[in-house]
Amino acid sequence: MATDHAHRPAGRRIEGRLHDDVLLERHHYPPGPAIVLPSHAHDDYHVCLNLGTAGSYHYRGARHVIPPGSLSVIMPDEVHLARDLDDRDHASSCTLLYVGSEHMRKAAAEHGGPRAGLPYFSDPLIRDDDLVRRFTRLYAQLDEPALARDTHLTSVLSALVTRYGGIRTASPPESGPRRAVDVVRAYLHDNYAADVSLTDLARLVDLSP
Image (cartoon, rainbow, N blue to C red; front, side, top):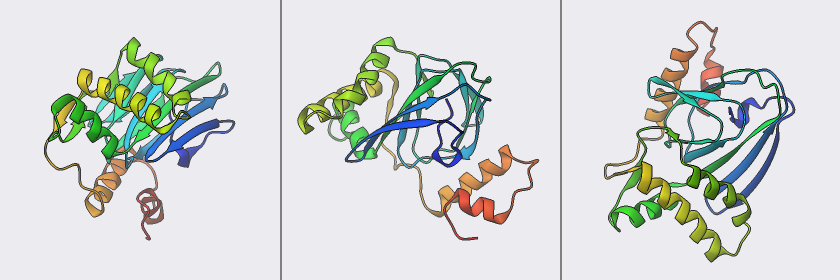
C-alpha cells in the first residue's frame, strides 16, 4: 500500500493520468519485503484504493489499518507514515488519486451549497463497494472529453463527501513554515532512534539546511 515517490521500491511500475490539478496513478508491486515510508505530507487530497496487501497509516496520533479492497483518504498537509503490514508474497497494486482543493470544494458545494468550505474526513478508512467500483472506473474516464471527465470525477468526489465527509468552513491547514515544523516534528517522533541529520530534515521539507 505504501506509495511515496521519494522511496521507490525496486521493481515498482507506475502508470499515470494527469488532467488539470488531478493526478491518478496505478502502482504495481512485485513480491518482496514490506515497505515502510517515513512521515510525509501531500499538498493535495490523497485518495487510495488498496488492491494489494494490507497496510496501515500512522496518522493523527493513531494507527489505522487499511485492508485490501478499501479506500483511504488523507487530508492535504497532514503528516502520516505508511507501511505494509506484511511482506508481499504475490504481486499487488493500488490506485492513487491526488486532487486539488478546487475540485474538492466543487464536490462539497454539491453537498453543502455554494458557500460550503473544504470537506474534512475524520476517518481515513472507507469501506464502500459502490465507491470502489466507481473509483476503479475513473482511470479510463480521465481520457474522455473534458465535460464527461469532469462530470465523472465530480460525481465520485461528491459521493465521497456526502457519505463520509464533513464540510469545513474554517481556513485549510497552514502551509509554509508552520507545515514544515509539523512535518519535521512528526518525522523525529517516528524516527527517534535514528541518526537524523539536518540535511535529512531539510530534504524532507524541501528547504536548504
